[in-house]
Amino acid sequence: MRSGRTELKGRHLVEPGDFSIEEMSGLFSLAERIEADPAYLRESCRGKLLATLFFEPSTRTRLSFEAAMLRLGGSCLGFAEPGSSSAAKGESLADTIKTVSCYADAIVMRNPKEGAAVVASRYASVPVVNGGDGGHHHPTQTLTDLLTIRRLRGRFEGLTVGFCGDLKFGRTVHSLAKALSRYTGVRMIFISPPELRVPDYITRGGLAKAGVEYRETDRLEKVMGELDVLYMTRVQRERFFNEEDYIRLKDSYILTMEKMAAAKDEMIVLHPLPRVNEIALEVDADPRAAYFKQAKYGMYVRMALLSSILGVV
Picture (cartoon, rainbow, N blue to C red):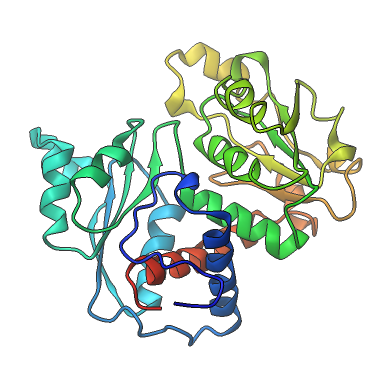
């Protein structure tokens, strides 16, 4: 076991609270070592199999996990949409997980149903990593976000973090807010239209009870100058039951260079991606735009996670 890092072999990761702050810090240190030395752990997972079970579309999460496993010397199997699995025939999630556990050494799963990852972890005989379950949690995106903040801002304590866009359905927002609430002195500002406000169970049910300072607003311009981190999100069409509501709200919050002019020089802009039009293309050239760096950090932290839960480090 590495100094300062608790053993993670065989552990599930369903939501951010499954790992302690010390365990996450150990993963971040390991990810930074991998980034600095690409040859480190290159063959550590040779002979290991990762199953990627994606019941919902994905680019970054699925490919970054597969890239992580391949870079560690392991192999991947799985499916990218449920129509190519026995789920299309009516197989239960429990049976799918029990079966795949016979073939793979670890499972990464994305499912549109909240709580699906909890179910999977109960029936799996190998470690399960939640790649996103509906509007609930996305813990490896949270690890990605935290690593990016640590690398580019150097700390979590005392930062003011703004979340902008779809805060009602955005699982990445829910997971990151919960994770950041564990650090001292973090302030949060939630920026959204009233229809897409962050759920009460995150704010009054979570942040308030933890003593975290937060507030809500419907105007990004009002708070831009206060932010150390701006976390942009897209308005997710697939989370809406009403097409008219989606069309009315989808362009509500677009980050432009005009709005960036009020931001601190050291502020960073994050986005879990995919981007639709909530960040103008002109912003990409601004050195504070960190979302593509963020995507690369996601691969490093998933390499650290896989090597840890598979027990090869």
